[in-house]
Amino acid sequence: MVSAEGVHKRFGRQEVLKGISLQVMAGEVMCLLGPSGSGKSTFLRCINHLEKINAGRLSVDGELVGYREVGGKLHELREGEVARKRAEIGMVFQHFNLFPHMTATENVTCAPIRVKGEPRGQARARARELLDRVGLADKLAAYPAELSGGQQQRVAIARALAMEPKLMLFDEPTSALDPELVGEVLQAMQQLARDGMTMIVVTHEIGFAREVAHSVVFMDGGVVVESGAPAAVLESPRNERTRSFLSKVL
Amino acid sequence: MSASEATDVAGRPDDIRAVPVRHPGRWIAAAIVLVLGVAMIRSVVTNPRFEWSVVDHYLFDERVLEGLRITIELTVIAMAIGVALGVVLAIMRLSPNPLVSGGSWLYIWFFRGTPVLVQLLFWYSIAALYPKIGIGIPFGPSFVHADANTLITPFTAAILGLGLNEGAYMAEIVRAGIISVPEGQSDAARSLGMSRMQTLRRIVLPQAMRVIIPPTGNETISMLKTSSLASVIVVGELLFAVQNIYSVNFKTIPLLIVASIWYLVCTSVLYVGQYYLERYYGRGASRDGTSTLTGRVLRGVLSFRLPGEHAPPGGDEHR
Image (cartoon, rainbow over all chains, first blue to last red; front, side, top):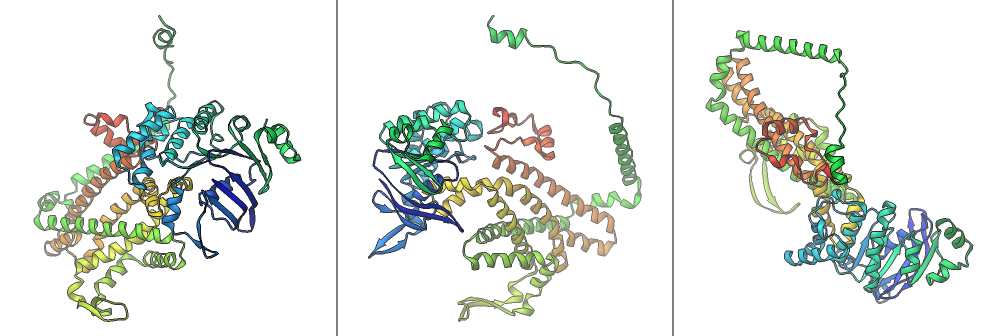
């Protein structure tokens, strides 16, 4: 589903990604671990072209991200084409980024109506269904400011799912939450994984990675330090940096 | 009796009853304000040179009302041009293309850097600069053209002068509003597949409105008053109308009072409009409508008619 080969990303003179290579299969859940500043979030943002990569190849579902290859030459995609591809990839942010001037339902229906041209009634019905699925059937008309962090993040998940994505990206979805609210969001994500969604999750929740992930990637300093099955990476890390990181977060 | 009832009813402690702190300083200040106020009102009422009967006579004079109509027309049209132009200039200013953003910068620099009175005089005498104005291909033939003197009447000159000048100020206000919306909002919108324009129109601008509305209200009020400058280029607005009258009967002061009363009436109406606009665009923002003085006054005056007023959408009772 997602394939990266030697992905580089620079911000000015600072090199944030120094050659990331990894594969995510359809239906797989991959957890990206690592200290802050290791480039996990940047890599995630590259996957839906919120950031442009400087070198390497990155493709989703067999198609290059942001470019089209014609006769061995890369052509930048036009804005509309990039947008169409983004619509197939859901993203959940650390700070939820719900639209504060819209109710929960409006947040969920906004993109299906505006981007896909779905009829209003159909979009609303689906929004109700999705919000019910994340346990917010009684908050349909609530504004984000009236919801707790955990509730907001679950609305954000419903909002991303409303576009029926084939891939979901989670950028530290529980890092901004009170400890007691983390569980409800992880539960919604676990349910999603069980339903067979392909997911890439940047997280510090080692327990979640151990239980839900099919593979775990440990990043540091813009490179992949270690990757493999959760049991292998988390229980018996081979790399010294992985070991010291895990000993601190566990 | 359940535990919750016990705390709610029986268990509630008595409110504290303490002797309040006295504030003699405030009392003295209030007394001074009162005395000054009474003295001022007394002089206004008793000084015969105010000629209140003349004010009363001309307040609803046909010529004054016609002037008022033109003042309102000028304000509305010039503001509409200003807002539309401001949005376009602000979006241009944020363009990655240096020519587009540079053009916007240059416009703002020029129109903010020259007095609006000078601009009005410029537009009024535009015929001296371009005797003929036409529509056509740049550097090529023109299809329609007209005499500048007939095309640019004093009224259109005033609209152009006030509107184009306002556009420069509105651009800065709109730009500040757009910048105030967190970047995560457009990240989220774009990750959902929205185009740049959709993101701007559906996500960023509605949120920017909360920042844009209050200074725009100020601009509208300011425009209402600035439109009096158009009297210099013989536009028959409110000030021009009363000037015309007192140049004949020499009742200068009472007629200036007439104009002032109408300006005050208009700005007061704008205050009310601004309050409701602010409340509408503040929805979901957990803001209390009482935060402005106008809001408090309005609430006091209108509370019996607006029961919903006490629970604004997204009110802060959840916080």
